[in-house]
Image: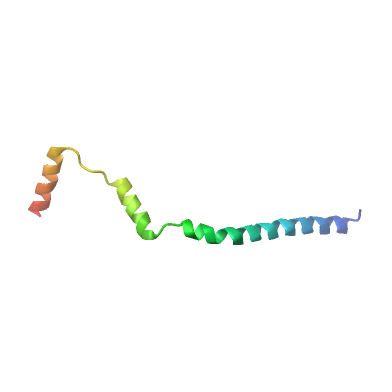
Length: 70
């Protein structure tokens, strides 16, 4: 087999892989955009994850008193 033919076969195989990857990407991209949450949802989820409710009564009273002092 001549080396030029081997090179053409390898390039054709790589082109088929690249083309199939591009087609798959184009079909999946609209679905991926639908699943991305809005920035507002991301912020709310992050705030809920970081902030915790105060369960201790003494601490709650201190927080209320601090807010009233300002």
